[in-house]
Image (tube, rainbow, N blue to C red; front, side, top):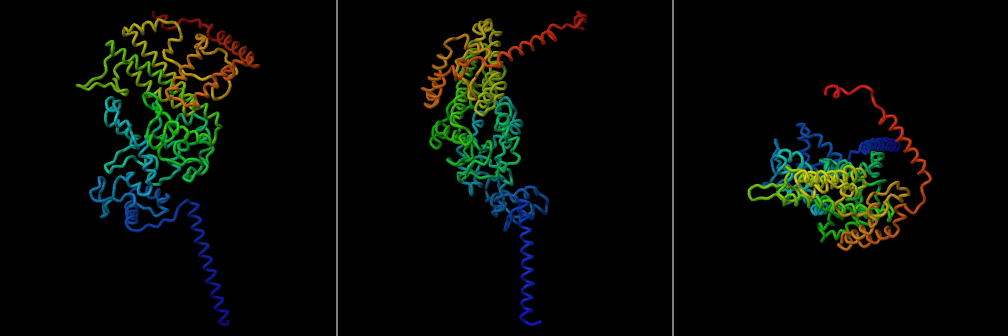
Length: 535
């Protein structure tokens, strides 16, 4: 074989081998990508940490989670988050090594890379855990170990650390994967926003938003970014969509207070002034929330829905006013006594005592049912607005007044003797003609207050106008309310002729009732009861 041909032959072999190697490498990389595993290059102390943990079989699952994270992909290893200096509150030498590490990575550590997010969080009510300041119900009624394994598991999101930082990023971002998809999943929020006093996950799942998420959410990629004003990629919102994610016209934020116009978890509903110097007025916060809603909903629906939700908050205040009035009245009459230890009198809205019925009813009407009523109205949770909300509040109100009557209060006794159904509404009312879901084209029997009080809408108008003038409703909301008031016969459906199906449904209903009476009510068994034969 000629020398030139031999050289060409060798070059061809090496070229072929090189191509084969490239194909193999490409295959490996493709497999890595298919498995979702990023390339990882670790050096120094982090490499030592991983090797030691794997060798000793300590928390190896956390290493696997970290390997799938963006931190691993960018070469951010153990020591970057767990680094500690001598004298740090959580510093310790890892067993079997000379590496000084921090046991508790805090927001102070996260801020090395995520400074903006940490600052936003510090200004939110997630960080300010007011329960630390006013936790009488937990501190008195519950014993410490229950509080530690109960309240504090959720409220650690506002942990105050010795290094001066506030919060616990891992409350939402799972250690050690830090996946956005985990933080965005409504069930993550539902770890804490659950239960009788703030059932937000249940309210969400009851809403059409949650319904769509349950049906389709398993196919959604929640790892998206909205940091550069990208369009929201979801068909329906998750919790972060409304409260944190960016939109094409506003940035994302870790301040969950930035879009909330009410303090509707408090004993009274009031327009928020939280961090007003940075976040602006309640109207500005409402604009941010409406901006999120406008990605899916028409402006008139948004305005009408918020008006109704806001009136529900105002209505709650008038109901609570009755609970407070009755408790103060019963204290003044000596029928109840607030709790007192030494010179300390417990008279906060949280704790007036739990040993007498009116005190308990006042607490639950705020802390449980009152929150459910307001938050259900704000988040499209019909059952929580109604049966878990206002129905329970009304029941508490009646039980409280009956207790007062049984213990000698004259006003309560007169209330008990009254046969008017208006007695269950001893407070002033807010309302709006019609509802956000459409025109009421048939009302078989209007609410008794409409029938009993011809001046019903005049009274309501005066109340809504007073709230507007007091700054609790915006100018736009007042004008929207007036528009519906001026066309109330239309929105209430009373200007329309009888619905063509109404007569048919009424006849069927009467037939049902007649057969119920025939089959059950008028049917009597022949033998006596066993109790009757024992008398």
